Length: 237
Length: 172
Image (tube, rainbow over all chains, first blue to last red; front, side, top):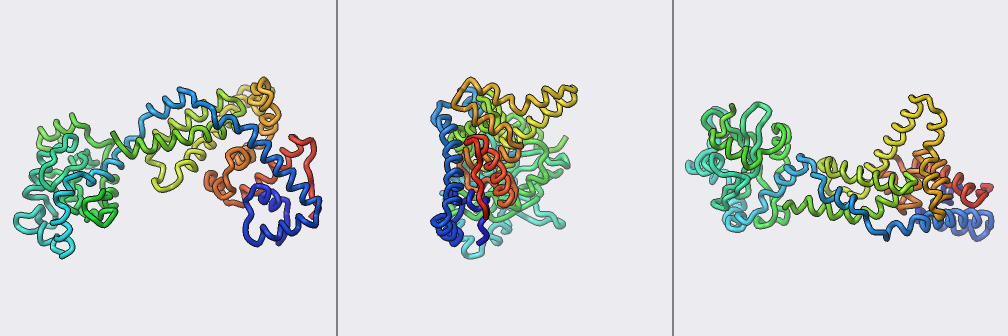
């Protein structure tokens, strides 16, 4: 090993390990000048530790605690959290076992595309129908009714002017935007649960989150904006 | 209301003592240090989406604090130069030290730190004051570990001379 002052300083800082550590310790036994150097570097470290030590035990000034408690977090963070956590609601408990069974059998496509299912394809566009379409029309994300399997997450205005809403149904999550007469699905993905069971918190699928991030203008609608958008049937003005 | 945001605020609260100590070693003055910590907390919360969940919150906040401090220091220097006031420009480096002289326990240490170039001062604050490993300090600063090692070595030689009156040297 090439012994340098930098290495000896790192040794004094406890930042050396393995073979280098043994080599330095061996060298220190035979070289008093190296030992003196290391001792001075350790004293320097102690010097700084003790000079600043008292501050760690001091009471934190109120203005810092206030800044911590009152500064609003970024809107983007807030809606990312909402997106990430909205599927972790109790409704999943009730649908847990049937949904898991359907998925395990690979039946989900059949279930959701059945005539009474939530989706149909019309001229190359996937549209919401049935209960999902109704939920997108009426459910308010901000005042979530815990009814049925369908849950609306956030509502937002897209760059193209349409209103869009995220939703989850059983183990699926997606985002749909309001066209003239229907809800067009912009992204749909399965939402795997973190623990492998369906009653635990589910993460928002990346595909859906990325789609929302690309489409959204500003922040998700608040409760009043949602009511107003619903009153105009989610049609862009 | 939002559990994940509350959890982050709590984690930040736990970091405040370390951040204050780090800020004091940079700013050299308690009021300035707490200004820096306050700015750091506010900026972190307002830009929380920039923190990658799963990565260390402390590294991210120390990075914000050191960036703010560097920016502020440079801005003050530019203002002094623009004002054609070389004396003011000269004074800036030791401002913190002068304020701290009243607190005898700190005076020499703060002065010694104030005489270091900014990049060395930051490394000393991270490793010698906060106690980070070289790896952790490199992560905060987004620089290779070798850069931390060499900045720290230059700083230590200057500090040893300043604090002990002489720096031990070795013939390798």
